[in-house]
Amino acid sequence: QVQLVESGGGLAQPGGSLRLSCAASGSRFSIYAMGWNRQAPGKQRELVARIASNGDTNYADSVKGRFTISRDNVKNTVYLQMNSLEPEDTAVYYCDAGASMFRYDYWGQGTQVTVSS
Image 1: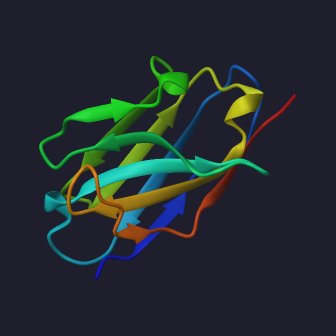
Image 2 (image 1 turned 90 degrees about the vertical axis):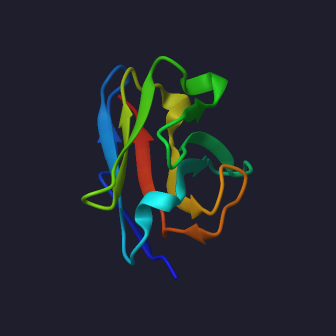
Image 3 (image 1 turned 135 degrees about the vertical axis):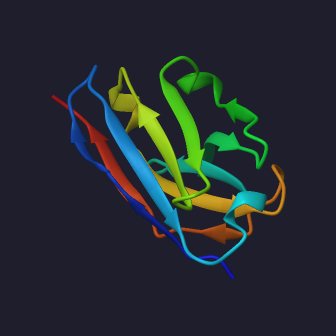
């Protein structure tokens, strides 16, 4: 069992930055693929970025070049650095952990990100 707790959300201005963190409990964090997903009001949840246990990453086209996912296997934490934020990035951001890059086995409770002037 893995428990995930997100933090770092809040209000940012367009063009600004935020860094989200997701702390994972339990052992064997390093073997899981980790990801960030988001859900805007009235829309389906969508993948933002994922990072494999070996550090390989993939990103949604809409965030490439602006967002960076990283992980610290000592701190059992995955991060999402978000730069050049746009109002369209406004959503609840959820962290997930999976046994592979194609599985979503555990979810956090979500953290709100609002981009507005």
